[in-house]
Image (cartoon, rainbow, N blue to C red; front, side):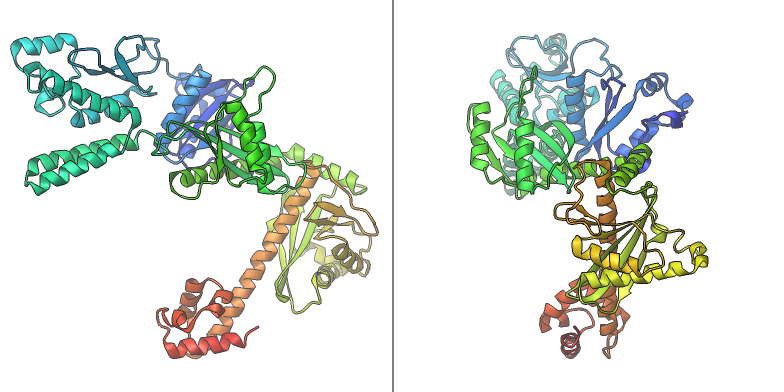
Length: 619
């Protein structure tokens, strides 16, 4: 059954975006490359019951040991990537063309007296201009059918052309406007050659200026009241726009560039490299690395570029394009450009895309990188072996007698000392147990350490009554308590634990700046190896407690401002909701002017003045 396939990804892991996917065997050889408008829907079809699959598909799935994918913006970009990877990897399960030749091309025979356009897989013809290749024969036929409406050159064979010329009667294509009929002298040789050259020029650059030229001609025909010609030009414009849309042009200026998307956190970074040549995506490369030390994005960009264009033994370095687009500029950008110029042999520009098509593609690259990083962390979390190893390694690092099967982590969030909220998150066997998360509202605290002391004192007092262990709130004693912070926070937590009925509870603190682990009564931190499973686990627990505390704090602040506004005469629930929807937060509402508040539906000038007066009195 399909469920027996160990490499089957979880449905939730597969995106619903357009993209290209690859199946691999156990030696990482690419078995099959395919594209999809919806990756999740397409890939799920491969994991149906094996008996229901087509024989060839069944053999491919049973031969595979892994599958991955790359997200793109459109299905047309997926088509181009599919071709790139099929040419690169030559997968054994992809469709083999019956004539056992290469992929189909669009060709124009400029050497003939009456040039013709046709589809061929033979690249050895003389005097022929080729365009393509295409992965799907239907795609090139559709493109040709559209182009003939705008550039009506002959597409018939020499035999058909001679027969029509002898009979002095053109074929059906001439009658429907897809051929200029040079066979019956509707256009002379020079005019027909000019049409062929226009087609070649358009296909060479996929230049949108051709659309602008037709638009000018359409407007002039309309001004001259030649509406029949204007309508025909309008249809031609639509046809060219369709071809341009399907050409997978990323940059309108035919740029050669490499574009990097980088997503990172304290322990890992995911990189997505989009290779663009001639304005089109030609390839995608992705990788994830563990970070040894905390690095800013600028430094990470520098190291990624050096790695991406470095040559290894027996492998030639990738070609360096004229333009490299990155999410941030390193401090030594000029020196980095000089290094790349030596490899390229000419100037190289390193810059950050700010707007337009390049910024849009940068967003796509970043989305791929973020998805890769999320999937990397999710898979590490879901791996039972990794979780077991992380708990055992953590026990050794902290000198615990046994692996901490239940870990509780605490964090404090507040706004300038007000609306203080603390969080408690629970991880059992290395997995989050959200049903046992708790939040604590704190009336007042001197500082974060005081808040930590109050929270742990309140939590640990429940352990005095043994019956409380079965009430569903605290299932059993925590094996390890983690606090977000360094020596001060650990000291406050230690004081609360020593005053509790369970003074021997294990405790540590995780300082975010350098990811140092602090133990009670220790002058030096425990440094866990970067990229290790135990540090990854602690980081994930700490980040989850921070997220939970911040969410609770924001909710409390929103509730506070809502209550304050509801006390103002004339303000009901709908008007309060409208105010918060317009300004987003209490802080922005306080900074708003009288005119801005009175512009909200249902809020007049008098009511706006009352709102401002009330907010000034609210801390």
